[in-house]
Length: 181
Image 1 (spheres, rainbow, N blue to C red):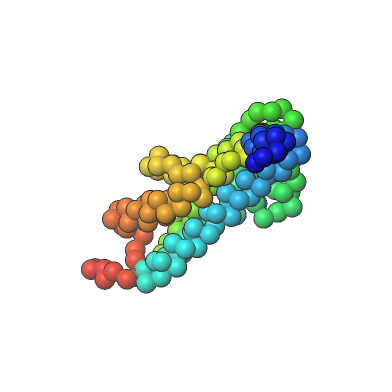
Image 2 (image 1 turned 135 degrees about the horizontal axis):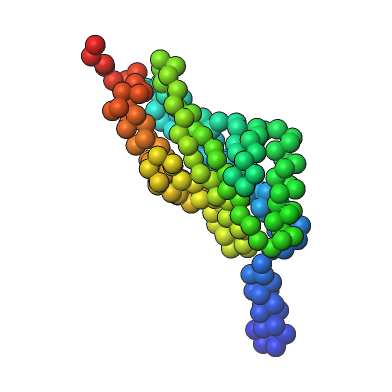
């Protein structure tokens, strides 16, 4: 670094990397974080289903989600949801504030086809250039919360603990465990 200009270039590069997002970039990051949060939840549910293969449980994220700010319920795979997320994100970016709070459900079905819904609160974080996690997810039943995707394993452990609790209550039944009549 013999050139004085090199130091200015490094300083400017560091400073611009940490500059907060704004405008269209912020809106796109908000919408991406929302979609990413639900995609992460789907992936984690599929991994738990695979891990509990012998018990014959199926865990899936319900397609219906509710925006807590408007209580609007929609299918997250629909074009309406994508349009809503884009518009919503642009409004928050223009205002420079506002969070995303959603309701979602994990549906757990046992081998007898008995299903139970587990309510989740999903808060999408305000994106920054250095933010690693895109959402905070909390189980309504226990109040346990996790930053996703960073806390993926603890989230899955809490999900399995909820399934075990439902087994112990007699609501769900594992195919792997021999039940006495």
